[in-house]
Length: 85
Image (tube, rainbow, N blue to C red):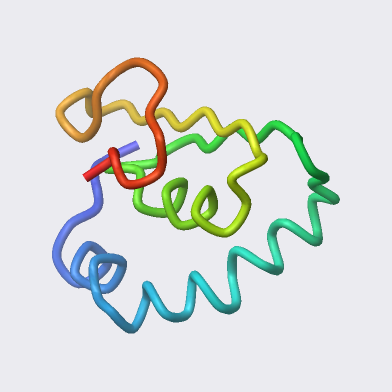
């Protein structure tokens, strides 16, 4: 799958998307997936990990594995929320 370009990349890096994802998308996804305390989540195509970080800030009890094909975005190993940037 090709890397995001142009408009779509700018959109997901915007403060408007951060607001929408934090208040609408992530709560819906957690409820729809039936994630419980201490649950496990795999995020494929995580980019720099901003979504995973936002999710962990709201649900620090979850175990999240985030992966992306572009190794230049993140790193390896476990991280605490706030360490992804």
